[in-house]
Amino acid sequence: MATRLELQQKRNALVAQGRAIHDLAAKDKREMTASEILDFDKYMDQSDALRKEIDGGGGTGGSRSNRLAEATKDLAKSQGRQVPPEQIPGVPLEARDGREPAPRFIDQNGNEVRGLRVDESIKEVMHDELPDGIRADELSLGRLVKAKVTGNWREAQAELRALGGSSDVLGGTLVPFPLAGDVIDLARNQTVVLQAGATTVPMTSSTLAIAKLTADPGIGWKVENQPANFSDATFGLVRLSARTLMALCSASVELVEDASNLDTVLKNALAKVLALELDRAALRGDGSAAAPLGVKNVQLGLPGGVQLIDLGTNGAQFTTTTTFTQFSQAMQLILTKNGIPRTAIYAPRTWGTIDKFQNTVQDALEQPDSFKSLQKLVTNQIPITNTKGSSNVSSEAYVGDFNQMLLGMRTELNIEVTRVGGDSSGSAFRNMSVWLRAYLRADVVLARPEHFVVIDGIIP
Image (tube, rainbow, N blue to C red; front, side, top):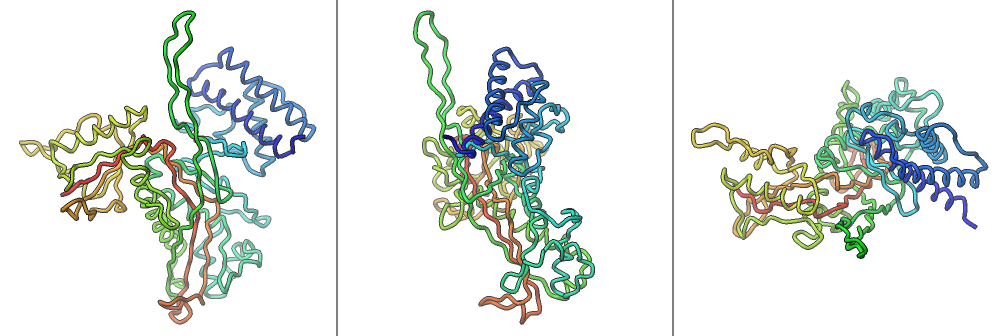
């Protein structure tokens, strides 16, 4: 006999299948076809039957949108979470600021996992309970740190209640998660690969396996009375494994006591260093030790891996006659693999080289439409001191469909505050300072590595 968990997992999958049919019709701004209606009703009827088997509940009447909306809310309630508006059928796509719905995945247990766009808060998927009467948006990291340093909690009563009297950690204080979530969101907003379209996948455990398409389905015309010739789509698993990323910063006690903008300064300082390292790991992580494997090291230049444009043994200069050709070639490689080249990311030096291009009469050089169509982003996490043959000033550029990059992120960010911590280089107590240690756990994977291209060997 199936367990309650197994039944719930089956129901999750059925509702996800029903939603996929419903959302496809909504995206195309049409009614569901007759065959889609048959499939949709089948999935929802089976879902209702499972609900009755699980808890004795009955089916939901009304329109198909209503049935799907109620099933979605019911599943969310069973998991102790709220349903974002984007997941509720009947909300017009036009009401979603013109954006596509965030991607959804099915994990190894049959549960639906909803990805987050860069402009969506990860706090939507957090379940930390705060004491009655306290709202997450009224808590302040700056007030908490100042109260911890001075011992005066008069202006930080909400933060004191949120601590719950159980947050002392080896002489420090573990910050309530709603405050830590603010730092995560700031870091995500500053992460270039997320601005490029990468999807944040919340992880509620240390590992997460979700399905991915590894080969597109074949298609062909069928001769009457002859067997069809086609190839199946093939699927594999994307495995995310949470890896630990830690940041440490300090501030003088005097600054903590006197600064009026302490909350902003602390959050921005932590978010900035976390964002920079997430970018570096996503683009160039080598998979060694605890680091993720970045784009440049996912089977670069090998079948099924990230595609490579090598500019030669010693690299090559970007000039008015070569630069756009290389980007056009990169886009062509991605299109050949049925991908959509959306974004180029490169170093500031590369940006400056391209931006200063002039024609023979010293006017700004006209860019081809293909290059104009790319979103262009810049990061200092792409070095300009790589060794390439005889050159030690080489750089690289990344072109790809960053929607195919998944940034798995554990929904906890831990921030610890202490006045007594120390290491071999110093001591917060001795220096009369306060130390903040923040760490999160994340991973990066590419759902379709062949939809990315690295242009390697750019020299000045």
